[in-house]
Image 1 (cartoon, helix red, strand yellow):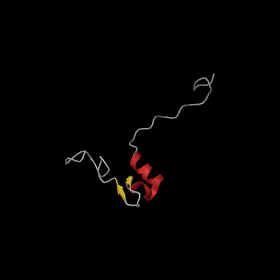
Image 2 (image 1 turned 180 degrees about the vertical axis):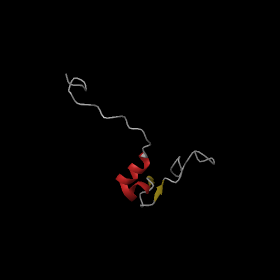
Image 3 (image 1 turned 90 degrees about the horizontal axis):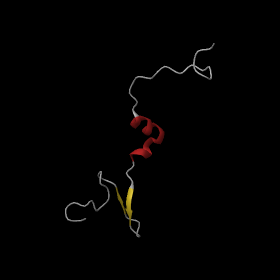
Image 4 (image 1 turned 120 degrees about the vertical axis):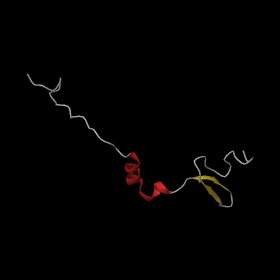
Length: 65
């Protein structure tokens, strides 16, 4: 009788190691991954880009939120 479960296919041995998901994402997205997101755009075309973890021009600090 064949070893390896019902299908007869042997399972792969377990993988032990670290996977750098950040590197995988940067590899897939390229330079586009580093571009900060537009969080607000005025009607005249002026934009605010995400500059902090909170993002946007109004972060809820310094009395503006």
